[in-house]
Amino acid sequence: MFKHPDVPDSRVARWDARWKLAALTIAAFGAAALTQAATVAGALTLGLALLALSRLPAKWVRTRLGLLAFAALPFLLVLPFTLDPSGPGWDVGPVRVSERGLIAGSVVFGRCLAVGCFALVVIGTAPPHRTLAAAHRLKVPGVLVLLTGLAYRYAFLLGDELRRVRVALRTRGFRMAPNRHGYHTTGNVVGAVLVRGADRADRVTEAMRCRGFDGTFHSASAFRTTPADIISCATVVATIVALVLIDRTVPS
Image (tube, rainbow, N blue to C red; front, side):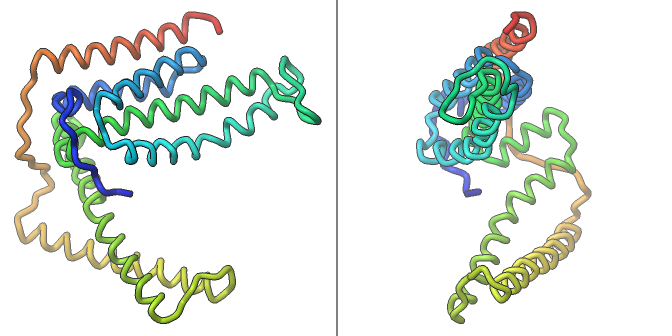
């Protein structure tokens, strides 16, 4: 799940990481602020268009957008039946579907997918270390950048630790069951992984101090701004700003 895909060659991948990160961060915040179905649809269209231009692996995109859609699905399923049930709507058998609730649920659902599209473009079109270097160039605190990089790096190590523990349990005949023994064993496994993670963190800290680490983020990534980078950034930002203005000024 955390493995970064190979970055395919595309116009979005060649976009300077600093301008791309700035533009898509603004786009994500702008999409999250939208409240009308039409403007949310516009933001989602922009996100899907950028994903298409990125030429990212279809399976990688579908899996992650599917998880976001699943997380936002409760809003789409609950709000039509609970928000303004006495207002305009439709009677479906013994229940009533609220028009306002259906629109509100669709807006929340679309916002989540739009923000997810922008995030996947940022993550998938540049290696993690380059995106982190771009964030540092945009004045994100170096400590925060370092913590993010270390967390990403050691997520794989903790995953390997958990995998080894699971193999050891299965070779001893353990099968998870919803009973006291199963929950007790699962708790012990989680505790063992956390303890091993803490021990590894201490060793990493000592190793970094031995190498003269002073808390400063260093990167060998070189950036070069081109007119296309500026035009792309201005286009995305102008589009999302226009959507926000329409959302705030045009009545629904």
